Image 1 (spheres, rainbow, N blue to C red):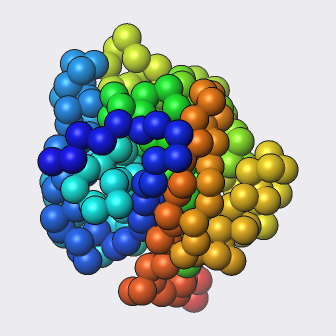
Image 2: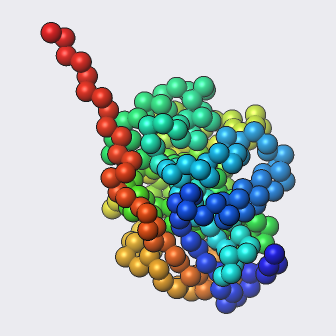
Image 3: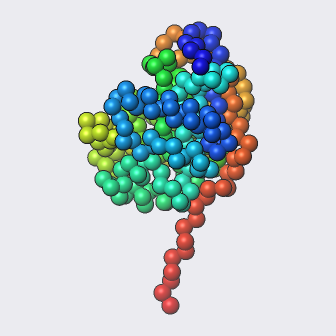
Length: 258
């Protein structure tokens, strides 16, 4: 395993792919995520399983070394497919069933969820393992046919989601908040209403995300938003198997009384 630590001018890769296309990297993702969760004593989070690696509606984002041996962090985008509940439904549905109808409504035009966000200790506090994958999740939304996106955030990642255009989903929970995954931890439900034009994103973030959509494979010198570290990011965001129409969930027609 490569123990490379990030310094200025380090080269890293941020890659997106369908989970079923790269099971080996998915297993590295699971190992890294579990290690981070265990630090905080979290074992019962709904996405802390390996079932998802075999689901074609899961798309994975990884921040990794150039040789792919070490992951610095990542995230997943789960597309609503009418079969598997989104993580936010599993996590909060018993506390507030309204989430089911909200997801079903938006699934008609393509919706999904940014989940499983984590970063290793090497990049903690840099934004590289949290902001960057969150940004990329929005970038790939167009490829996989999403017009909206949900997320259930920790207090530290709510701001990232606001930067990329999400707003707190105040119609569920206690004005959008839940005690999850433990009674002493607060999670906030957020919703990206416009994953196409990104009208609610911070102008600089919107410019960055639209640029990446038009340049899915490129190299950019990126600066950490919190520390004076620059890294050369090799973006590889083209998902060859993506189909914009694959997961549009049409609701059954309502029966009309004779």
